[in-house]
Length: 279
Ligand code: NAI
Ligand code: 15L
Image (tube, rainbow, N blue to C red; front, side, top):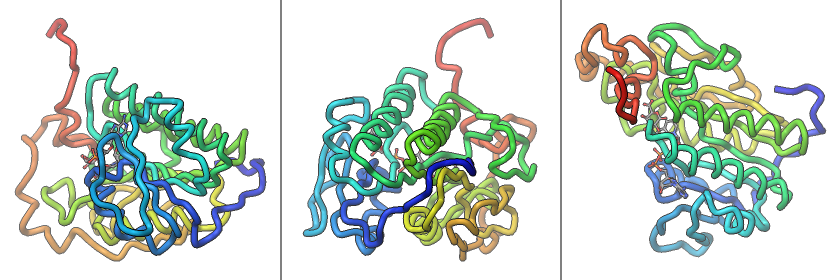
């Protein structure tokens, strides 16, 4: 975070036009009905249609990698919840198109349109190569567990650049495992409940004067690895705790000693490399 950046001015609440990218995805569908109370119009974006629209909704379908379409999409947008993109470890070209070029297009379009705030869905996979159990804060050096994690760090760096140079505010959320309930042992540490996801995203959207900030996005899990650094700046107070599911899920884990069991990134450590080569 920079102290010398231009004076912050978050989006006025309610926000006139809020853009939700990745609206057709898992988290997009979850957040869509929870965002309308903070905006006058919710503009849904994805590369596929998000279905029938409510009165306060509009939609534009285009690819994040289409520079001209993204420039047009951002016209009149006050704030963005950016969920769109490749959401799991994948071959580099796929990650690059959506999460590198797509993020560049989003930030350039936001700068040109005068958009004030982006809430960027980063990921815990930015630090997925740390051992399980190691306490981390967003100030610790990154240790991405794949191209996907690297792409989220690219997004976090774009956020810092566009704050320092252009005064565009971003809250980067290093989301853990957002799901209805925790489903395995790892999620006892990484789980983010749907209600806490809503609390986190609304806090990141509406808090005044955030500048550029990166926080972990996780519920109040007793077993969580990640610090609450930055939560006070946006007023995020998680209410849920995965511990309530311990007896059902703690037996569900990867083979002991495997990278998936040893490292925080879990299953992503079992994906890739994607090109054939020497064993
Ligand atoms: P998802 O894969 O269900 O949704 C992503 C959406 O982005 C999809 O609807 C897809 O069509 C769209 N998309 C992908 N590439 C695109 C492109 N080039 N142009 C336009 N649209 C494109 O992912 P999910 O689970 O909803 O996650 C949302 C965001 O949160 C992602 O950025 C993901 O990396 C991040 N995240 C999610 C976590 C989780 O637990 N679900 C954890 C950490 C981060
Ligand atoms: C992510 O970044 C993914 O988008 C999501 O599908 C989950 O796998 C999550 O991380 C996780 O680490 O559990």
